[in-house]
Image 1 (spheres, rainbow, N blue to C red):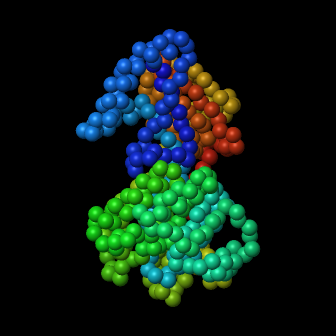
Image 2: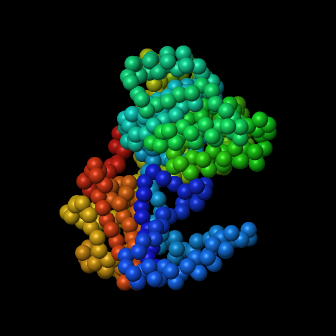
Image 3: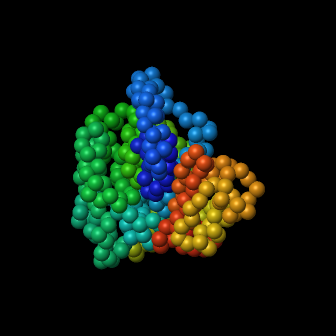
Length: 393
């Protein structure tokens, strides 16, 4: 049986953290088709096993390394990934202005504070505003610039009472959507959802997370802090720890003095480095400007194999095909073909996101067949497509 595992971008699995790989079966010969027919009974047995209520899905370590998982490039490099994030701060602190700023930069694809941004359509549910206030705010912040990729709504239904359907319809009409902002969480809590138990809070964010993961988007939920101080800043999030526990990350906006134009933005997430940004508010435009960050962004070392593949593709554009053994020989490596394939499987996201190379591996009786293809419009420098965020250091 011939299996093909292919890398795709901007798409995630339906399960919250399932991270399932994309596998397609293709027949390259009559022999392969016969093998597929012979395996039909095995396929039926597998189907019965999956439909058993007592079935527990598991993946072995070997299967993990033999699979290629989908790329989830961040919305804002080093700052905002895909998934569900809380954005919290005290009332009337400037959260909505920062939300509008993030929404504008994502919808236009312009860098935010030196952080590279991937452009996508944005939906901003400004549920504590009206269109007149939004108009005045955006005019002061951005002037009369046209932007057909940023959409607003000042009314929406609640979770479990139509919001899911509203957001789904918007995403169907705008499939290039990458960010949805809900301002605020309290406005969309389902009836009776103000029962602040850990289980209830966890369930609310889990429901939003499942939705965001299903569509491969970032979903930012604006929320408030409580008055009690804490050694851990994120313990100040109003409600229980269930909110933070279920979310992929959180942003916390704070001021030492309410009258000050200076603030700190704490960032914490599963897929990114914890960091603290020091911001200054431009009183004329009401935009937040970056003063400095507390520490440099840490960047993991790239596997030398990835760099070698990048060099190969720069020399042999636009595509390379061959067996794993042939690629080992081509790169002059002293490793087994199966080790090469597994290393590439693990680094498939890096190849895609930083080097603009689509990687796929197809298993045959003669070994792995590998395909490397340059994505059009990607850069050719040796540092990858995203580079290092120098201005944010």
